[in-house]
Every structure is written in C-alpha cells, then in structure tokens.
Image (cartoon, rainbow over all chains, first blue to last red):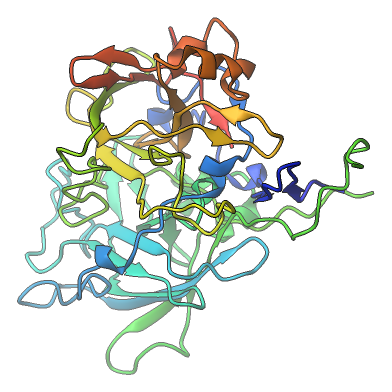
Length: 250
Length: 190
C-alpha cells in the first residue's frame, strides 16, 4: 500500500499529490536542442509535500476580462481562419473535477504567426487576433474557449522543422504540486512524427492525451467546429491514513 | 501486491518562447506579491542563467509562499488561522535574464511530523527549452538557526546548500538561479 496522507502528532493532516513521472518528458531531451543548456545535470532533490506544496495560488475571476474566453471578439473585426470551440474538463488523476481554477491559453494565428516581437516567421499578422485567452473552470471543472485554429509554423530545431498546430495551456489546479504548462494538439496532424517537443513524451498513450478530439456533437452548425480536450492534473490520493509504515502505531 | 496503476495525467510541455504575448499569461502587477510601501516588504531580484552561464531571456519565474505569520488562505491548510493572502508572483525574465518580486518574508511553518520549516519561498522556473518546470526554494540568510533545523534544507548536500539561500542586497535580497553547470542551483522533485 502507498502512503495516502501524512499524519501528524499535532493533527496536521495534509493531502498527498500523486506523482506520474512516466507521463512527462525528460528535461534532457537531446532532440529538442534548446533543452541542452536548460536542464539540471545534478539529480533532483526530494521535496516532501508540506504546507507550501499542498497549497497554491487561488487566482479568481478578477483575472478574467469579459471577452478573455472568446479570442474571436477581442477586436473590432473578426479574425481570419477557421473558428473553433475548444472545451473540456479539468480533472485530477482520481477523476475529480478541479473547479474554479484559472486556465490560460496562448497561440499562433491561423497563418502560424504569434503576435510577439520575437516571432520572425514571414506569415501575416492578423490585426483582429491577439492569440491569448483566459477563463475559470466552473464548479464541475468545465472550461471553454472560442478561438481560431492555429497554423503550423517553421522553427530551426532541425532541417525542415515545423511545429504541429497547437494551443499552449497553463493550469494551476489548487496546489503548487498541480501546476502544469502543456500544449493541446489537433487530431491527425501530419507533423507529429518530426516534432521533438510532442515526441519528448515517450509514452504513446501519454502523447495521445495531448491531442484533442474532434466533436461533431458540440460543433455549432454554420458557425464553428468543436474540439474536446480534458486536462488531467495530479490528484490527491484517496483519504485514508498512512498504513505502510510499520512504526505508525501510536 | 502490485504497483498502483499510473494515473493518466496530461504531460507537461515547454512554455515556449512566446508566452509573453500582450494580454497573455503575464500581467502588469505579476511581480508584486505585495504592493509597494507594504511594511516589511522588500525586493527579491535574481538572474536566470543557463548551462553556459548565459542569461535566459525567455523564461518566467513564479513564486508561492506563506504570509509573514506563516499562513495560507487555502482550504488545504488545515490550521484555523487564515489570511487574505494571494502569495503568488510571476515575472518574465528580461533580456539580461533578470527577474524580480516585491514580497515579504514568510513565517516559519509546521510540518506534519512536528518539525519546523524555516521561512522559505517555493519557486517554479519555466522557459523555452524546458519541457517541464523546474522547482526550487529560496531561504533567507538571516535565519541561520531555523535554516539549520529545516528538514528540507538540512537534507541538501552541505556544499550545495548555499544555492538555496538568498544573499542580502540594498533593496532586499538576491537569488540567482543557475539551471546547469558550475554552482548549479539545487532543484527539487515534488
């Protein structure tokens, strides 16, 4: 059995968030060249989950403006490209919804260009598209964005390197241990096989968890195609007291 | 007794170079955990450096900490005290790799086993080139006794412990983060 909670003589009982190292990419992934000088070489030190780790910033609705969830109405005109709805649930690894948590996204426009001074890709900027969005999950963990399907774009990682279309997601969950930055991809993208960032996740099933599902049922006729994508954060283990420690009898 | 089934979490990916879009994940008061003029507040500055010792100009540093009394306003803090405390700061790195926060020194914290954690700040570092965040902690140089008794800090190789302790400077403290190489900062698996 595993330790589910840390029990205190003083009654300080803290949840314990499960790790899932197999799902995540190695910080040192040589195919992704930029990781070479940006990964620690010394072993990581164990950090127990104490009060600072099991708590986290509870950022609220005040961080979201009226149009932050709809990236197609943030300017005077409509952005160019394929309008899409991206929605889903934020869950923890026990399947429980993560309610009232801030979800942030950023992305390239339909031509594959970011509104960022560092983006040199010679594709057009869209005056009606900023490419950033925010929303809060509701009480059931649901989120929804209306946006434009981003384009693929070239980069210089390797010969003829292109990023598959993707939307960046930032999630806080409710604890420091749950913080996640990830990317949502689109089904059937022909660029997956050559992308070292997507493929830095070695497990095929874990890679598939980054790919949204096209959903005809929530597609809005004559208006927007719909993609569903659930995001799963580390969850606290079931609430039982620690039972794997031979010396834990009081 | 079989191993538990790995939970099907969503994998981490790099924040990439373009998180700094206007209206994106950064906000104007991101580095200000407390407002200017808050009693006891100071500025914590640092540089984010890569394995060649070069500044990382496209990183973002986030901090999370208790308030001065060691409190969190959070349902997972089971202690009765709480405060109206956001405790969170987020700062992009400048072209020189610099980041800063205006904050206060957090109070010490109890652990479930009855020990005391020295005042500390949890740190997340994100950057292009990092496929997952890295995590470290900031401790304070004027807390020698508390630091010596801290269960996390005292488990770190004594020769590397200094990488987790801020250094005093005029407006507050400095805490440089070296991702790799000589004097590599201690990073944690959490």
